[in-house]
Structures are given as structure tokens and as C-alpha cells.
Image (cartoon, rainbow, N blue to C red; front, side, top):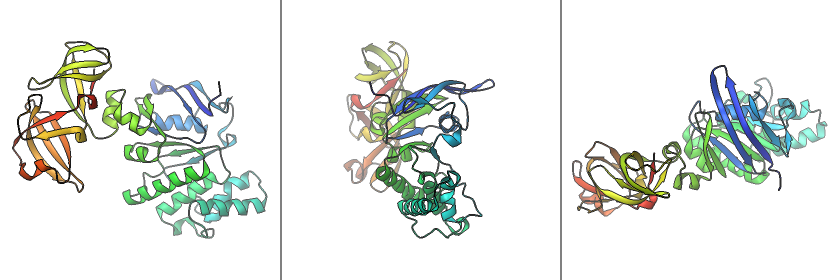
Length: 358
């Protein structure tokens, strides 16, 4: 069996009485773009800092090409790092900032000059060698930081929320550049963010962190279409949750009673199969169908609001139990022409697109 390129095995990190990371385990393929996604305090940055060598794990190991990194100090791991703040040297020019990792490795001047030019060309800043960091925009400074991290051709690049200080338009622009650079260089990237849209846009796979653990690892499509936990279901994509009663369960499917008495069969269920217990039912806004005519298997709701969002319409509804449900309809949907606030409507959905969590 071939050894994985990068292997994180049972990492645990404890600060006094607080366990910041517990049993984090994953393999990362060479050239993969893996994102650590989760809210603040979920353990994703701590895991990244352990990889970088800035912190030591309480337990576990990290292997690169089958060899443990734990006894290797951070400056000898040959791993690139890009931080949230650009951390450029303000007294050095752009060229000297990018050259810094090569100079401390005592590379020949000819090689330094060639690599600096190539790195700046890669991030589309060719000709900026003599600029000072204070003469550049935030987006340009982050490109310089990226060039500096790549100039010595590390096998692994770690990025800790590098775009969070930028505005939305600039973030999207740099996201495109990061994706392009990854494709051109083939460097293995581990990227930390709390922004699910950013994770979906950039990643080959995503590890979803929650309370110091990984809830699920998969592609964006896998996490969205087949969430393993309620947390993943609520964190990836837009979601509605309503309470339901488990009437019966067999295998991985359940029969549920919804608010108002509607009964549905064949709903995938996660985390237990106990009849008579409550469940939290996930309904994606774009997978709900809305009708102004009564439906035998429909869920009766009241329309609270209708919002135009460009290429789609968001209809805010409320069940008789007070649960709020958002419905996303395509622009021009026939129901919108006659739908008003306060109207009674009925929602239906394909049971295969819903998930129940216990």
C-alpha cells in the first residue's frame, strides 16, 4: 500500500483544562487543495499551526512522505505559510521581501534574482520588485506574501484565513488567483477559512471542524448532498430545519410525522433510528416546491415575505407551529405572480433530498 503524501494521525492539543483539538486524522494527497472549514474556536487553525511546527501536539503525529515532522523545527520543515495579515517587512522592497526565504537559505544571487522574478510573475506582479509594501493595496500585498511563500518551492503551502481582511470583490479576485496558482504549480495546499463559499470555490476536499473534531471530510458536493451530521448540514449551504417525530425506521430510512400531521416515508436518517423520538429535518430552500393549491402530502404554511434576489426569489414562510422555512424559486416562477404576504400555501419536497438527524 502506498504511503499518503501527508498524513495527520490522531492529533490532540490540550491547553490546561481545555481540549482545542481531539483525534484529528486525515490523509492529504500530493497536489491536493484541502480546506479546513469551521467556526471560530473549532480547532482548524490550531491544527494548521501544529502542521507548521509553531505548536507541538499533546498527542498524535504528522508524517510527510512517511517521515514524522514532529522532531523537525518549523524553520526546517520547508513548509510555506501565508497568514491573515500580510506580515511583509515594511522596510524592505517587494523584491527583497520575496527574496528573504532564499537569502536565509544562502542561495546564490543569480538564483535569487531568477526565482523572485518567476514568483512575482506567477502572482501577476512582474515589475513590482522596487515597490515598497506601503505603496501597494491590500490585495497586492497578499499577492507578495503568496509569492514569498512559494519562491523556494515548498512541497506544502499552509494558508490561515489569508483573505479575511479584504473586501468581497477583492476576495473573489484573489480566490481566482489562488486557484490558478494551485493548478499551475501543483503545490499541496492546506487552507483555513470560516467562509463556506470560499471553501466551496477553492477546494478539492473540505474537512469540516466542530468543537475540536472533524465532523466530515469530502468534496463540497458530497458535504452538501450527503451531510453526516446536523452541524455539517447547517454549515454547508443554506438550510431549513424543522422538528419532526420518528414514527418508524428501517435501515437508513425513516417515516416521519411533520408539524400539522403530514406523514412522509423514505427520509434518510442520521445518528440513530429510534421510533417515537424527535428528529431535526433538513430541507434545502431550493429543493422545496411551493403550491397555492392544497396538497395531500404537503406542509401547510403562511407566506411572511417575498424578496427579489436577482436570478431567484426567496419566499419566507411559517408553519402552524411557528417554524420558519425559506423557499428559493427561480426568477419568473409562475407562483410569484399571484403570491402575496399573508397567503396560505403548501410546501412539498422529494424525500430523498431531505435528511433527518437524531
